Image (tube, rainbow, N blue to C red; front, side, top):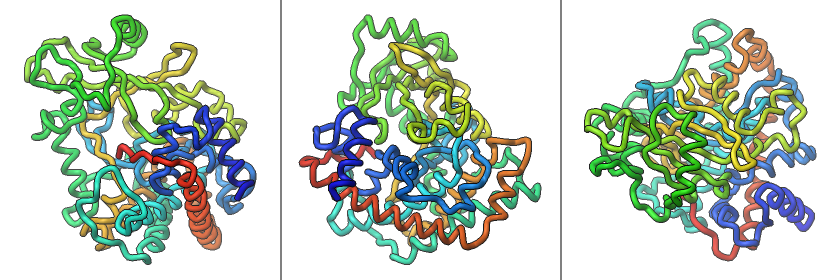
Length: 444
């Protein structure tokens, strides 16, 4: 274990600036459970692949390169409005492209499967008292152990199904996933998103905008939430306004620094800009306002080890994220750009009014989850992921054809690798938890 501990210290220290055990909030957060550690340690995952500690099945690694999420896991899919806060269609799709790049699709397949195993473990651990989440679970229904094996198989089946649909012409690259029936595990979450979009019944109380901004005060300003928002000095405000004003679609009417968001990027600075027609808004004009996030962007997690796979990966970190998101989504955010500022690369993107994420308990601990919903969710993620991968090259279907030509033995080997790597993450987590004396809880 000492050799492995040295590897973890080196890789995590390189990415985060300090080694585990130094009291970094990100590392303390990762000590919550193996699932949270996986979310925060994508660099370790790619180091293990580069060192050949773990290797994808050769048939899967030989697929044509495509644009990948890079940090693919169960909570990096969700429901949101297309075109950022401007669109009216609520869809289910990948929602995080911070680590997107050109790479092997098998990376995303492997990482998602590992996260599926660890999401179930996270919920079982909370129920058994081994892990303590920030907010106690309201529902303690327990997922059966054999549900995980079914979900892994259904995830890959969903991925292949989407490729079949694209090759046959039954689907095209404009296909999206939406409109889930009442008995589906995502039905309630989809209804929640629909209510939060502009014009929805919960827009003024539960949208991303309403949670961050008091829509009844004039002039409009961000709420005073010390644990989430830090005020800016007058000089900082003017600089943000000057630098980023050209990249938003209206006036900047307020700005704050966002604290403690994310898991993998919890130590990267970010700002929220309130953007709209003016500081004083009429009720009918409130849907015209939205929040634009400005986030310092580090290089995508795979690129320290795999930068040379494609010249596209040589783009600046924020530019690469923008290119991949625009290619992998059907209708990307209308406000989506990159800026060079303070000798760093910053991503500029609109935050969705109706964004609704998926936590492990949503797919593991509800009545619908126990009645096949866990596997249904996995299959849906497989379909959404295949669509995102396939959109990377809309000129041909060579990628999808390669997926469909892959023999059953390779798919089974991938499942075995997912299970093997999940055990590695559990072992790594035990080491991390032992050196983080006061683990913080995740901001789910």
